[in-house]
Length: 145
Image (cartoon, rainbow, N blue to C red; front, side, top):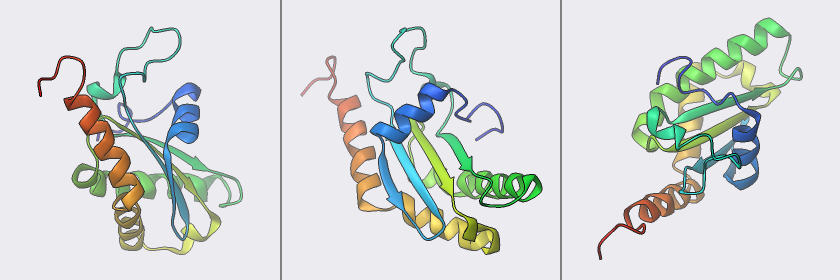
């Protein structure tokens, strides 16, 4: 996952991931995972399936409750690093993920963050959602039975 290319930056992508994705809560973070389906492009139809160009796509929500700007940016960097370490083994490229960090995350070590993310990404709801999306992709209109 490269630095800028696999980040969620559009409000519409954040909104869709938060509203349509599967939510899994862990100790110090909440994950929203939304596999990209055939209906993913925005309502203007200007964007084809952007997740196919990179991904999995990551968006972060680190509020001021976590700490001052220095602490928030450090937390975001640590979360991006932990996500990059575990995402390739747990998620297909066609996936949008939003991580919401809670204040307790500041005290966690990087290995704890990776373990927490890995555990959340292996949650049955996430596995089911990603599996359904993969089945929809392979069983689409052009697929043969």
